[in-house]
Amino acid sequence: MFSDHGHVTFLGAGPGDPGLLTLRAVEALAAADVLVAEEQVLDVVRAHARAGADMPQLSADEASTPAEARRFGDAVNLVMGAARGGKRVVRAVQGDPGLDSEAVREMLACAAEGVTFEVIPGIAEAVGVPAYAGIPLRDETGADVRFVDARTATERCWTELGASDGTVVVSTSLDQAAATAGELVAAGRKPDTPMTLTVAGTTTRQRTWEATLGTVAQVLKQAKVLPSPDGGRPVIAVVGEHCAPARRDQLSWFESKPLFGWKVLVPRTKEQAASLSDQLRSYGAVPHEVPTIAVEPPRTPQQMERAVKGLVTGRYEWIAFTSVNAVKAVREKFEEYGLDARAFAGIKVAAVGEQTAAALIAFGVKPDLVPSGEQSAAGLLEDWPPYDPVFDPIDRVFLPRADIATETLVAGLIELGWEVDDVTAYRTVRASPPPADTREAIKGGGFDAVLFTSSSTVRNLVGIAGKPHNVTIIACIGPATAKTAEEHGLRVDVMAPEPSVHKLAEALASFGAERRAAALEAGESVARPSERRPGARRRRAASSS
Figure 1 (cartoon, rainbow, N blue to C red):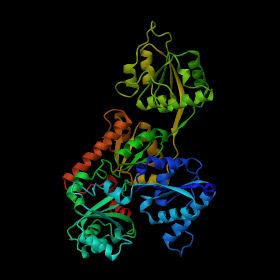
Figure 2: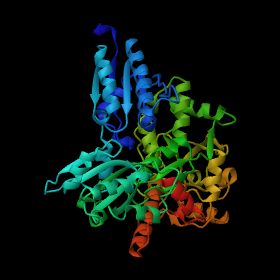
Figure 3: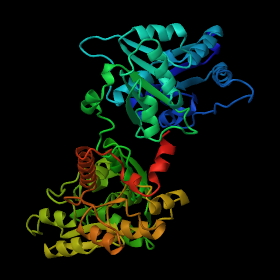
Figure 4: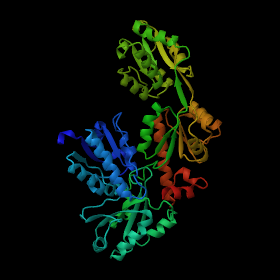
């Protein structure tokens, strides 16, 4: 019976960029009991799956069975088995389910057994990839657009495409691109018709080659893309005047991002790295987070416990937070005592910068003081009011901080007339070394840039992973950090105009944009720093094809 079965959602996960999932897709993933996803989109969708959802792997049943039949049989067994058990199933496919013949077969199987299903469309690869490559498929002329899969195209199909002067979008592979071009020329298209090929579309590994139907084989050979054992890699080819190089120069918005494809090392704690990594992604970079500092509780917690009790009993006029970790340490101590943000009632709260202020707001506390200028201890002191016995009933400040913090803030507050309870809220220790492949990439020039946000990140990264290769761009948050980097034999290329991690990321993006502009002006191909090291060209060709 209908009511005895579960429900299946056929979901289009798009061409690869996780940001292209629809809101409806995210809702369905959050409600699913079972997620059955193709390997190509598993990383895209599982981040939105609810905790505890079952994620069975699609696998081959028999080596002798054709791949398409294996995929269909395995997927149907998993989907129908879960649906018969009354589960809510999401079946995620690359691109759009309506353009996926195997997904349609699975829908028919559901219909045959009376299993209810729905379809959540996704962005088709044939549409999304050209958009990310800067190739509009139509303009004001309203030109005809045809979509074709080279693997299944018939002779009649090629003949029709050859007789048309519209745009043709072909799903093919690198090693079949020249054959695809040959079919179109044989059918009547002119050899000088523009053609583009895009691999890994909508991801930061995207790469587009410009050619014509007559030169595509030569272009791929000169780029050292072919021959290659990975020539079967899927590509989206666009044929027609819309993909002419003159148009792409103006419309290639994705691959022209200032840090496009740059692998950037972010040596911070996981919590601290999140917003910085998001910002780097917006510039086209691929952030790689390597913790260099681990945060641990103080060796003697009694001092912290007395201070937190003092907050409740009215011992302090102010509490000053100099880091997100300090907020976290106090919050954890509050939770240990069954307290919440209401314990801050009547106490003035200061935050050293925007990130620390955001952590306080997430805790339910709106800071009374955030530096109007430089986001640092010095900037906080610039705006801190001197103690006034008429207006300040209490002269004491609670300062929870790291064990290695500087004395700048303490000395400055005392000079302003305040008494300071300088309390170690947490300890910072050197993190464990990263995996061997990460260490090798750091020392061998596998990273395009590294962001140093403090002197300790310089010392700790070099200590646990070794010194970055000399092709790697070194970006530092300020003069003190730059000096430490230079003392470790590093060449500092970028420095933030002010001590802010976001300004540091902006400065690196500006550096990347200037570097790109200089290469184009000189008539050179745009290459990442890591591609300049010895042997990188050969490795790049192998990994890109």
